[in-house]
Length: 113
Length: 112
Image (tube, rainbow over all chains, first blue to last red; front, side, top):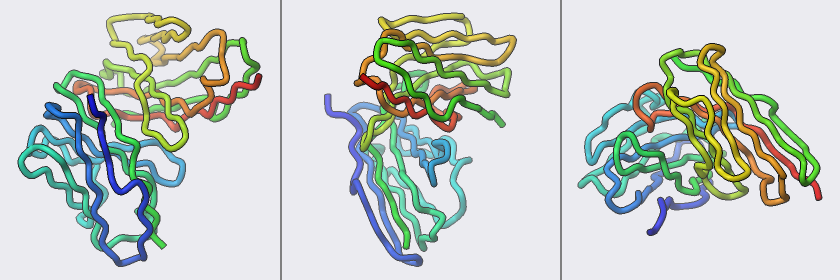
């Protein structure tokens, strides 16, 4: 089966610009998660979708971040406007059920200059 | 909330030797503990996991032990090979398996 795919793999933008990251989960996986790792620190949870509904968005840093999952398939994470501290690697993961292990994508490396 | 500490941050081992990575967690309600391996340019890949009702689990050269009383768990890799070189992350979860609290990672280098 195809794994979790994310694009772009890299994005370099200037402070104040907008960037949209996309994640395609494994087909049939209702649960979709966003994580990020900034400046070599630990990977941190951002939010969790079950189908198209946000189950838990307690990890979202602030209102500059907006995640959507229209139709319950792919998801987008938009950062607007981007700040320097948003630089890092953004990972998407999916699972078939709430108690199933996560499958991670390769991540999007975001650099804000 | 949950806090996971991971040690060491870097680990260099000779091929064929064993490697051990240790993690501690703070929330006694945590009940799921996965370990992930991340190779350069790729996302974390689950290599082994353990639930709180099990003390030890083994899969070929990889084993994980859990001490609930002390709130720590460890990853053991035996007979290390160069392809074991990667960053390893421990994680803990309370309730749902998907909301994970990760450790900071351990860079493992296996030298031939």
